[in-house]
Length: 469
Ligand code: ADP
Ligand code: ASP
Ligand code: MG
Image (cartoon, rainbow, N blue to C red; front, side, top):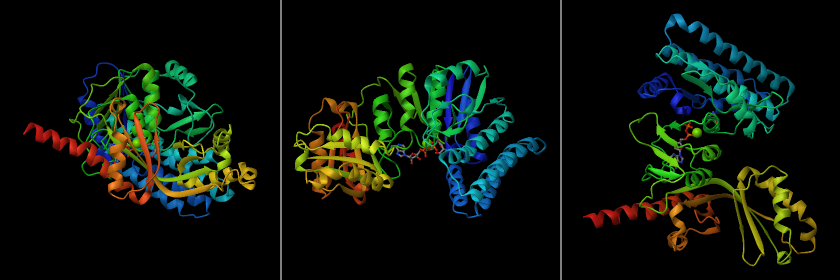
């Protein structure tokens, strides 16, 4: 079994869908293949704007639904012979009428729960998988279309749902038909009580890895619009290049710290079953892409990549009364966790006088309020200073297994940034020594990533070239 996931740009229009068909036909794969698809690019954002408009009593969500209809109908008209279009066009219309009814409910009732948001967002993948399935039937790729909600069971954290792997794996093993080619929508799932949930933005990668692990696939291939995982975000760093091989742990760290090409939870299900993951480019299929396994061949560079997360808020809790008092960190994390806020970064000064945490900018105020409330008495007696919030920061991380044996990397990192007047607000190194992350002002992030990339990758390449000359 081979599982392949195609992202939004790979199903963006008729031409891209034909490109996927060409990729699949190249596979001289003997047994079964499963293809997981995202929504057509831009569609999930359009669905988000539908519920936002409806909730604000703005009837222009109808226009967005009209645009969704045009987008899908255009693809159908270009992909499917005229006399066969009627069924799939009917299905698309039916799905869009359901969507319209739900949005109208939101519009009329002024009610918008996370459950409704998830339900509205699910239409992107329901539509794309329906179109792709019929298109493939007409491309000599007969297939069975499934609804991932019948297989993937989650908790009721509707928008970032956590998969119940035990129940999900059991359902996949029990229900999955033995088809040569199965098409499945990514991203969408169902709670135990039968409500639609979604696996977080970018979650189709995760859907594919769940299927791959449950079906003990030989390999998972994630196809997008770049030649694999790059040494840095190619949108920020012109000189970034595709990385040949990575370990699961390196890939997870790069993804966690912002390499959007891979949704971070995707790796975990693959690790236990030791399923290799390959990141490939739909529009450049002959490129080998990035291979991610447990023990890749040792590369020349101990650092594999530089990642960056923008729009970060830093919160610092400090005070002379914190020194040697047990339980402060626990109270801090608990106060933030009860608000369901995800912490990206933690650092404590060695004097124990301050703890700094980082989270998404949009959650900064909420965290500030929660912490100010939790420590109000300590602040009143001056054991703890008023909690401080610094918005618009970025986390920049360098990642690589080889850093474990190589001293001085942190020093190089700080001196490069220092010599270019970039102020480092906080530093953390994971206990695994696989990652060093720093926090800089958001304004400095692109410059910091480029400086680090140039010095750890380009300088090396130049030195190697000189040595070879
Ligand atoms: P898909 O829609 O196929 O899931 P995504 O948009 O989620 O694709 O991810 C691919 C994009 O990730 C690329 O177009 C690229 O701009 C961005 N990206 C960010 N960081 C990296 C990186 N380190 N390596 C490769 N791509 C990256
Ligand atoms: N369509 C969803 C999103 O845009 C899931 C995905 O593309 O992976 O977030
Ligand atoms: Mg993606």
